[in-house]
Image (cartoon, rainbow, N blue to C red; front, side, top):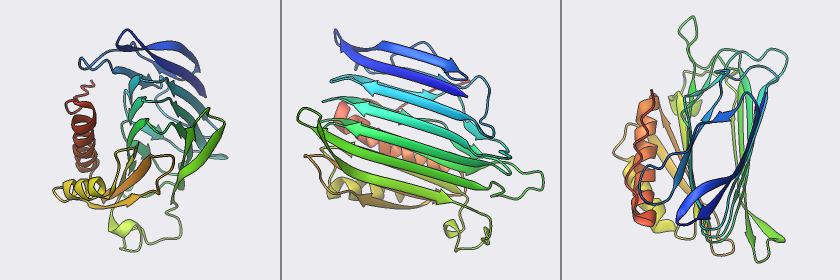
Length: 278
């Protein structure tokens, strides 16, 4: 079980934590800055090492107007056996006007007999910039087979607030359900025969069809099957979802990193991420 709250504000050209709170099995490491953009980087840590049955983790992150946050994890999120009940993560993200949030966790690994639900609710303003990259992979099984987990449910809801914030509209609702039981998980009918899933969610007023085509072209240089979908435009901002399938965590990480690097450079003048973790 764990709970974490973090609020980032812009002060004197740098983004800093105005509030942080943690309870249970969630922590964040001391902040650091990877470049001179003022973007603060926080690393999320689960000292317990894994999610177990009936575990609930609640994460609340707010990035104030003009502030910039990069949130990553110290290691992969591991879901072990969950007899009796599923493990669950509920995350709320709120971005102010001109706020920039990049969420770049390590991969989510579901092991044998694991059941996991992830509910992410995001609220942005018309000028907010959001990039979320995530990779899902099956964990090792004693008999060497893949897809021994029970179920993964990943739900992401994105809403746009405009004006005073009293009015909001639904920009996108992304649902991923992977339930291997009852399927021939080695056949083309299940995840097109691939074992790993990568997702890139982007919301920004500069998102358009030309960008979606450019990102899709980036994916063609990788050993993965990928597709890009655009949302409708709401209050002047647009979102896109890039979904990719592969048999390699490293390949999906390279693909998503290449796409994120293009956006970081073009929109914010930042170099590609170089997160060194030991």
